[in-house]
Each structure stands twice: as structure tokens, then as C-alpha cells.
Image (tube, rainbow, N blue to C red):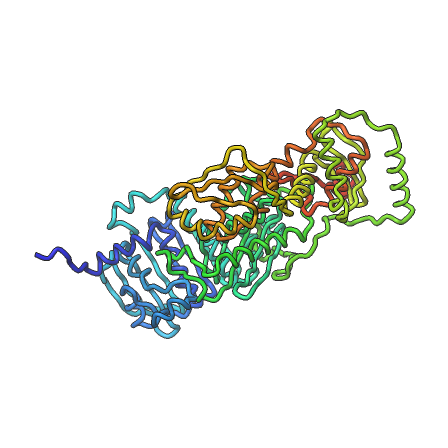
Length: 611
């Protein structure tokens, strides 16, 4: 008797459903994406009890004729692929023809659709045909799913709570709204409207509906391209961050995907600005020739593969970093009352000053500057000169801090850098915080964090010019790798030799290192060499300065001014000036603020001089 049998359609669809339909949000995803592909400009999603009781999706798309409405329940029946060439030129969201038959195999499925002439309904119960006929329906499609997973108790058993399942649905709807701001999308749960977009095409309004108006107004537009990719969207300023990466949202040709490389590139650009456990909010859409991206590598199409991945990573990283470097990111202290804008108003009441597509070049602090005339400026300079000549404050002599301050102060190339904004040092509090002022308002500086930033940029500049003079090691370093990595490393170790790392084969699949270049004298050599090896194994590329980030940050911290170190007026001014010479004066290497700004207006509000 033959052991191999042909499975019937119902069982085949159940198996396919195991890949495509994991939970209620998977059903919503497949149905909504069909509506998008149908050209809908309005989509309504109705959910009952987290999707466990009912899921209903209504759109105003092109609808289907009777023959298509019946055929769409057949496996691998699709209007989007005609031959194998179409597999590599996919611009639609759904294309496999698995969604509807897979969902219908584990639910009661009611399809009602119309092209605007005659409406058709088709009904299935757990994969078996039940009924069809004519119905009265305007142009569009209405799909209703009930009794989901009632015929597969094992799947039903592992579903989460109603709130958890609805949260997953809500998250998906938000992401599809970000991908298609031109579609008006409404989400209901148990007859209550939970989420809505107006479909006017303004991505910033969709962001406001998700995160609130205050967050939306704190986003920076970004737009750049190269020969293969076009990228556009919004990224948050450094004073708006979250505790997880879930709000770094990447879209590829308006398809929401989880692409680790893109998320890593965005996050890497923020590392110099945010603490290690904080992440930005970002919504980035990547437009790419469909021939350069494979969307068919995941059953639910949540992952994609790029043929020019490293070029895209560089584009994203450099684009985000450039956008951050072109704006004033000073932490501005605001009145608490202005910070309580957490409600989500109706979208038709929201207006935004930020342009939709043009990147911001520079943002002045939110205060009307009071320009000083030449007489006032001369008076400030004279007062400061007199202050420096006065008897200096007696300060604690921290030898390492003092040498660090003198070293960066005397470094010629560092001193040649222009001062971004002149701030006049006034006093010091608790040997820890410096107070300064200019015509815009008052500044408070954490002297340790500021000196960390100054030292970091000083050392980074030093390390960027590698000293390849070799020094012998008293005890050679040994490294051993799996044969699979050893074979790749043998092909690529020439990259390491360019920075003075010469690996000698030792044993069957290991290396020995007898000499190291001088530029590594202040770094943990064993760990750092292994990090460089892993870098070229993964990327076939080595960015020494990027790998040195942590080592330089640690070195900068140890050499910085500590708390309770009292400074003279000239030393205070030196810190202000050197901080304003930095490329990124706003945060220390660990992401903590270095400087806080109180505008004249905010100070007046604090003292109730203005309402």
C-alpha cells in the first residue's frame, strides 16, 4: 500500500493557514492589503473581542465580478502574477493567492463585492463552500470573518487575551496608515472608533494621530536618494525617544517590513545622541526598483532582502546623521504646562508648520531673539574681561582633569574650529554645573558631560589618523574561529593588514598576533581585534573609527572633569567655547544632555512675568 497520499484542498489550506494566519492581526493584514491593492481610498476595519468574535473589512475599491469572487477562494489564484518574471517585479502587497482560501479554511468567511453594477456574495465555512448569490452593495468589497480557529482548537488555545490580540491589530493598522497616508483608514473595536486618518496624504498628520501633536511637531523631515534608492520620511529630535526599537518603522515601496539592517542604520546614527537604552521614533519609506528587492522570503512578507544592502545602509545612516547635524538639538527647558499636550485632537483641527517634503536646514530656538547693539556687546565683553582679571576662585586640583582640559585647549586643530554660538560663562554651582548667557537666554552646562564630549571629539580626531608604527607584544594574542569563519577570514584578512593587524595562521583554524600598531595602545587589544574580525566577517568592510566609538567614549569619560571640581572663570569659558566647537555639542558620548537652554520667554513664564 502506498504511503504517500495527495492531501485534499481543505487540509492543504489549513496547512497554508498555519504559515499565513497566525492570529487575528494576520487576518486583518491580509484583508486590508487586498483592499489597498484594489485601489481603495477608504478602508474601515470593524473588530469584536480582539478579532476572536468577528473581523470585518469594508473598502471602496474596484470590487470583483461574480467569476472572480468565486475564483479567489481557490489556492494560488491571483490577478497579480502572470509568469515568473512578475515574481521579481512586485509592487502590490498581496500576490500569492493564499490569503483568502487560508483564512476561509479556519473560519466562517462571508465575501460581498461589487464593481458598481451587480453585487455578489460568496460564503465558506471552515474551507467548505456554503452559498453564493446576488446582493445589493455599492462599489467595493466587504469581507467578514467569524468563528476564527474554531475548527483548530490547538491554534485557539495559544491565542492571547482580547486586549493583546487587539493591540496587535491596532499596531498593524497604524503601520499601514503610515505607509498609505492617502487612504482614509478607520478602526473600530466593539462598536467604538479607536483610530482614524483623514486620507489627505499628510504623513505628519498620521504621525500625530499615533504619537500626539507635540511629538509630530518635534519630527524632522528627511529626503535623500542615490542611483538605486530614494528615501523619505520623518525622524525624531533627540529629546523625543522611546525605550524600544518598535517605533523605528521602515517601509519598502510602501510595504511595512521588519528589516534589521535598516533599523540598525537608523539606530547607529542616533548612538552619538541618545543613551544606550533609548531609541528614536522614525518613519522611513524606501523606494527601490522591485528587481533589487525580494519580498518573497517570508510567508507573511514581513521581511525583505536587498541586493545592494550595504549601499542602502550607508544611505540611511549618512542621511539620518546629516539631518541631525543640521539642526539645533539643544535641550530646551519648557514650562510644564506646555508639556502636557498628550491628548489626540481631531485631525481637521491640527495644523503643522513643518514642510512635508523639504528637509530642515536649521531651526532657531523657539524664542524671539533680542539683538544687541554694538554698545551693549562691547559692555558684555568689557564685563567679562574684568571678571577674568578678578581674583580667581580657589579650586580643587584634579590633575587628570586639569591635564585633559589643557590638552584639548592647546590642540591646534581643535582650536581652529569655529565656535557655533558664543556663550558667556557667568558662574559655577556645586563645582558641577556652569551657568552662561547670551542674548537668547540662559544656559546650564554639566561640566563633566561637556568635557566628555570635548574629549570624545578630540580623541576621535586623533584616532582617525592611525599611527601604524608597530610594537611587539610581550605575550602574543591567540584567536581561534570555526572553520566556516576561518575560510572567509583568510580571503578578507588583507583588510585588517591595512590598519596594521597582521594575523599569522596558527593551528588548523586559528591565528596568532605578535605585533600591534601604536594606535591601539589605549584599547583592550584582545576584544578590539575580535570586534574587527567580526566586522569584516559580516560586512567585508572595516570602519575602524566606528568600532572605536565605545573605546573612545570610555577613554573620554576617565579623562574628564569630575563633579566638585571648582574652576576659574577662564576655565569655565574654555569649556563653553570648546563645547561650542564640537560637531555635536548637545549630548555626551553616552547620550546624556551636556547643555540645557532656558529662553528669555521661558524664564519670564517661570517668574510669572508673562502669562
